[in-house]
Image (cartoon, rainbow, N blue to C red; front, side, top):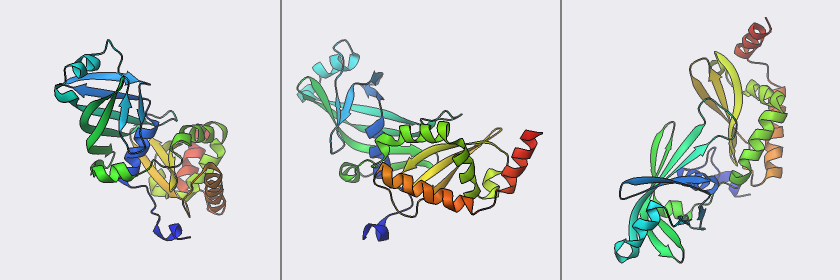
Length: 241
């Protein structure tokens, strides 16, 4: 009950950063100025540290062997890629600066500086907030949910555009689901040369897939009561012609 009074329409920067980290499958690691790509080689601890198993023949593994005091400064970069095919699929980039220490056969990375870069710009996240934050509860299910919505229910996506102002739909050639989290659903409005993102907030946060389904149904019910935006009507009429 108390949560309904404190939730915000969007996740904070620390939770966004942890969500990017939670679902990223690959990362670029730069140590001593040499970038190296690793895929499927890392995991994340509960407090946001990164456990990386570097192949023995990698430059990173060789650098780690020579690291003084067993500590190695490094920069880790992660990309948040939209699961639905879009013209511009990178939704955010996460950059962690810190140091590696040895943890058995693995390297354990402690972030000391956290920067989240999204279309509005870069945000520096306090390391303590980053450590304390948890990923969005829908983060690991997001890819499956969005691809299902886009592929199996394009009619629902079109209906949701009734909740979008006509100005935001002006010149639209396609609307696709871009992101979803416990606070809302974001649509990507693609135009001939530019894109725009529109967020549809939920009436209350969703903590699991069942609650998300209910929140989306509420949005669809609201959309059913709204009139079709004139911009989309013109778009559909022109396309039919």
